[in-house]
Image 1 (cartoon, helix red, strand yellow):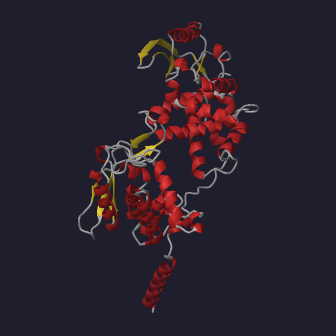
Image 2 (cartoon, rainbow, N blue to C red):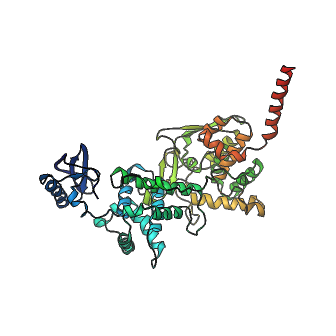
Image 3 (cartoon, rainbow, N blue to C red):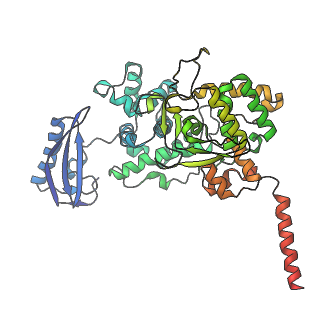
Length: 472
């Protein structure tokens, strides 16, 4: 049904844009002072759409202000499919998003779309694969002939298109609430982590916001749903934090199993680096004094992330990016205690750097066969995880190994930041070293600050006694 209408309309000519992959055609027109445009892949579709506008204009028909269409044709327009709209959103976001963000959007929209479809009688695993690997992957679709999916996904994609709700139907409160509930669960039906729910919910919200932007919806329907996501569980579990003695045993076992990774894990523990930041380190980024008791400095210029070849612009699984939550050219410095300086010096002497001086690179293939220098690939995270698991088995008791203690290499970073805070380093300084905001730092590591209670009580007692002395 038409809303507010106007006869203040002007239709302009066609515009042709010749891109690298294809040529597109655009119609531009003005309705009540607002500029509209619609782009098509063929000249025939473009001319047909423009002719429809001109007929309405010549017959002095009122135009709907919201849609920009003549009122007489509104009822004839097909409803916009949720699937097609979500694909258009992905195409808009793709050029400006990082590989990890692209994958996160695809995962969120896949979960939402599967929840909205009636999947009775069809393999939902195949639906998920088709949606994530082709429907919500702009690079995969741009490489397909005539925008048709590959044979392995063809039948599933055609089924999804036939059964997709319209955008308006997807925005209905009852359906949308069910979709939101699905975002809060993992595939096995157990609750998903708060960060996963927040990431997927953000993707869904952005799709509806894009619908508002292109005038397909009047308002974002998620703003009307009284649905609460799970509470944040960002706070670090104290059980994962190793003490200095345990950390030393773990590093010693890594040195015995896979010597070239000892300094890798040491950078995480002694300097609080993220694994992706360690993978990006180059020899020239290190300031390592020769004095055995002197501190050094690590200059962090970026991170190296592995997302998968399907999500990067280069077609490589690994891509160099900026520091987390930082501008592209932003840098950060973090101190290296003497223990780390010594380890890094030994590493540089024993293991040749990779291309461009990269410090940590993959030196062996899947079968353990050494890779010929110069080493071109950043350190494989698969090897990192396998060696860490072996080191935990050797360094920890059976009970500790089956506990959350240092379960992931990233937990060494938690141990580093917790150690700094408990040593009395000001939170502002710790936040700067770790690449956090102070707010996030205190929220995430609140439960790991131990041993401060008694000292704080003594400070209060001293303040109270001093006040009492003044009054006396």
